[in-house]
Image 1: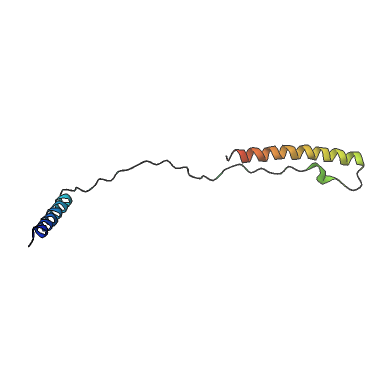
Image 2 (image 1 turned 30 degrees about the vertical axis):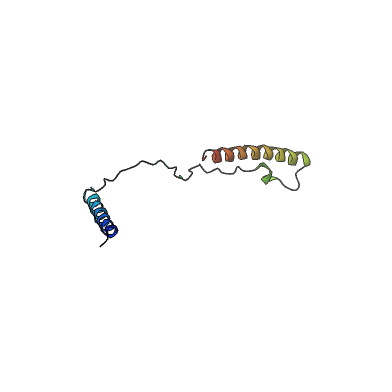
Length: 94
């Protein structure tokens, strides 16, 4: 055998011994617990908003113009208030 072959054989044996020595001294790793804060979706529990009895529902065809206009204006105010209640219910879920 030549010197180069003996050298490579010696290096191979030395590397194998180092690998075995490194594996023999290893201890079982201990589990580590890490706290991770992640946002979780929660279902919204907004109260049910019931529609009010609209003022124009009771109008008849025979009612005069003044009664109809007053009922429609009252219904407009009702609708604006109802929309605010709905928006408040939606905003409570945000």
